[in-house]
Image (cartoon, rainbow, N blue to C red; front, side, top):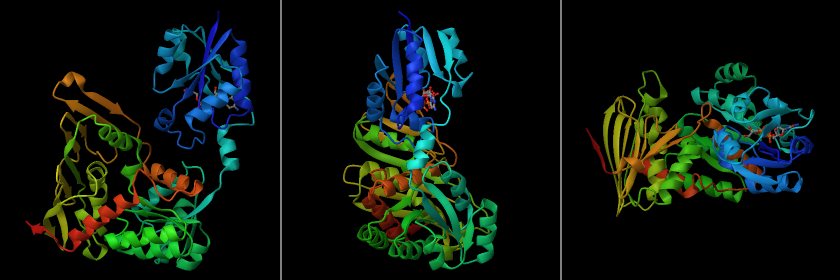
Length: 446
Ligand code: C2G
């Protein structure tokens, strides 16, 4: 019996897939089809897959060509499968010509002709609503947003707003979009906005955009007070709009996995979370400008509080801060967030350098994420008995903004107002802590 194996995502199953499966089946007597798992696809940068794994498996089964369907979940699995199932022929479409020659060592490799003129990418584009996004502010992060949004189907950045027309123009010409210095006409031309302006302006822009029926993706810190955060989420809810805080670590696959592993008890009960983030800056820069809500805490608390709030919750008992200030902003802040059964400490610096790692300590073991932990692509779960340690590797593609843009568009498309990766109440709790700091509650200066 000649056994054949082939693999694919089979999203929005189409005639090209069907032809491929038929040809693969004709190569032998028994066809095994490997369908990629959702997490494997995310890991290899396929963020736009529409059908979930079960739907894709069902679609492949319904073609009638597969004698057996298996799930492909990790890099290198093809070699394991070929040996495990005693495969004679590995078949794949000609778009992969040459890429799987390394499998010749294990079985015969056949590249089958690809069906021209049809693809999942094309089908997704044809059926995808396109959302026109306008960027507010044209600084450093805004520049990264444009290429990252090109990786997400459904997101189309069309214009930039900046009250400083020259700055808007410069930016627009660099990235090839329109510009505007009139906020109302800017809003008229978009379906959604990405707010990347100085921190103290976020609230007003978000409010005006929501009141004008626009979805909002807002850079961190979304706002500087809990009350403002509550008000904006309420406004979004009332107007049936998406408001998402662009806390990019929250949406990256490796960080999500840390949260689910810890929540499922892999390190026992969590008793301590320790996160650090330091990025040295040199003047002139907004991080050192008190008028622009500069300082280490305003700049970095949103990211570093994320693992604390996600893993220990919002019911903290007390928060204290220790800061070293220079020129009216904190260049170093140490923050302790304590809970009845756990503690956490956060070290932030823009004028003090330290190791930027994350450690989540529990009664059975701990999770260690090396610097820069907030761009999570690797972490290790460690135990007293080192033989039980486990390392996890992920890809963190590009500048990482694509994950939050993807989440934002998915929420708009599926009419979801809440995102489990960063709950509204978690974002509010973070804003509450930032507010405490800025009003000097439990703050000691060094
Ligand atoms: N295919 C085809 N004709 C098309 C489109 C796709 O013959 N018009 C083939 C592909 O070449 C592949 C199979 O259909 O053999 C599945 O394609 P995808 O769903 O796009 O999956 P892919 O990303 O190619 O995954 O481990 C996964 C594999 O590497 C392939």
